[in-house]
Image 1 (cartoon, helix red, strand yellow):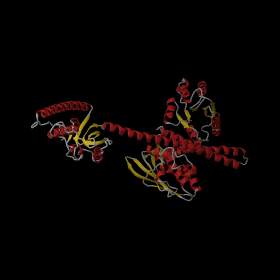
Image 2: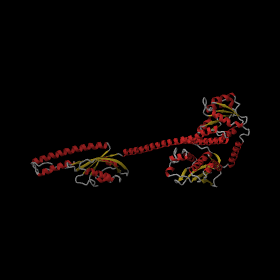
Image 3: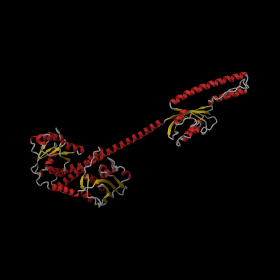
Image 4: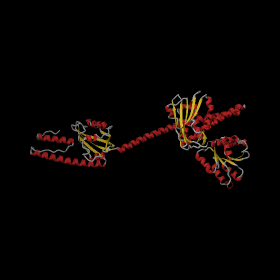
Amino acid sequence: MVTQRKYGSELLTKLEQLVKASEICDFNISFDSDGLSHDEQKIVSLLNKALSNYQEATEYNLMKYTLTSDALGIALWDMDVVDKDPVNPNNKFTWSQELRKMLGFNDEQDFPNILNSWSSRLHPEDREKTLNAFEAHLSDYTGKTPYSIEYRLRLKNGDYRYFQAFGTSMRRSDGVPLRVAGALQDITERKQIESQLIEMTKNTEAALEQAISANRAKSNFLSNMSHEMRTPMNAIIGMTKIAKNEKDIEKKNYGLNKIEEASKHLLGLINDILDMTKIEANKLELTPSEFDLNKLLQKTISIIQLNLEEKRLQFCINLDGDIPSAFVGDELRLSQIIMNLLSNAIKFTPMEGEINLNVFLIEEKNKVCELCFEISDTGIGLSSEQQSKIFRAFEQAESGISRKFGGTGLGLVISKRIVELMGGKISVESEYGKGSKFIFTVKMPRCEYDVCLKSEEDKTLHEKINITDGRLKGKNLLLAEDIEINREIFIALMEDTGINIDVAKNGKEAFDMIAAAPDKYDLVLMDMQMPEMDGLESTRHIRSLPSIRDKKLPIIAITANVFKEDIENCLAAGMDDHIAKPLDIDTVLEKLCKYL
């Protein structure tokens, strides 16, 4: 506070006005010297000059700061808050031209220097918190509450952008705010990057959790698979030992039958694993052919008939009369789906329960039929959570399922993929404790040649019935197989046919034997993986022999590689056909009859 000396009260008033003006940084004033003495007029003149110099220096510094802030993309603002409601919309605010440019305005006429120009453009969700923060900063006389906040402002074109606001206050010694000034910066791009980073973090965390869950599911799957494979292996090993030591022929045959059942079960597990491998490699494909749907269903039901009888289950099948009898599709894969679903229904339905199979025609367009299959049961049912898991790879409805009922959890996953390849969908309707209904659809062209189908089937049946009628007797076959036990089994199985069999232990030996006697052999069975020379290379060498080039020598691959490209490689090397391992005697005899 200025103290009174020898000057008059009027000068004192002017000096006090100067002090106040300097505190609020408002230099748009000057001092009137009328009525003052010569000395007083001199003092006033000096004060006005000092004030003018200070104002010029301040305006120069403000200009430099404005230019710098404009270059950095920062907008400036300030407001006199002496004796004012700080959030009154009509308060005079000074907005820099940079702010107007940021918001899409041209001048003060478009964007007046009042608080409402800014506050009316705050996003509705940000308005209250932003004004409260501004008021809190000014009302804290300690000056410890900073003004720093992010909010959205509406541009002239209606879009919203994010801004970061900073502010500081000039206060009297008692903390009362006199003026507030600050800056704004457009941070929309930064917020977008932050949002993207947050989303990426969420996606990464979700992917990590999914990977952990998948690894956990695979670990559980491997544990279940180990149990599922060891169980039939234990039966095979145990029953083999019992059969070897048993003298009673009936008990020996009983043991051998159990070995056969366990072997088929183990083969089913292996086939499921191979199918799953194809699915994960996106290599599971269909092999369309003509087939009779009625016969397919009869054959499938005959396989599960014993299981139905053992649990005294009531089984009912309803086939829509509008369904054509014959189709072009993958008979084996369709049978696999039905078998999987019926086997599950039998497994999870208690004694004397009920299972139904309904098949009906949804529609037919351009000779392509869409069929719907429904398999329902009165079994244990599924909860909503369990239903969300059952079509996922390597998962079962819950861990206790595998312990109580067995299984690997692959059947439904494989069925789902086959259904999708057939142009359909699969779903489940179930309530825990009240049974389940599995529904799937497939699309297949109808077959116009039912007679052709029947004659082909009759031909196949005739060949199987008459496999020992002597047509193979005296034929010469070369078996290229490096595993001794496999050679022994094949020779034993062919013993009743009267066919002559020579063996080669690898591909090179097979080539040498044919090169030495090109006219001796009527057919070659060629294993794919052998030492020294594999089956593909051996076949290519054989086909290049001049003595064989003009002779049609059938070469059939014996392979455990059942992917499409593996079969294509066999054909490309010069082979005529293939037989999958493990060998099915009926399939082998059928192929031999076809080529001999």
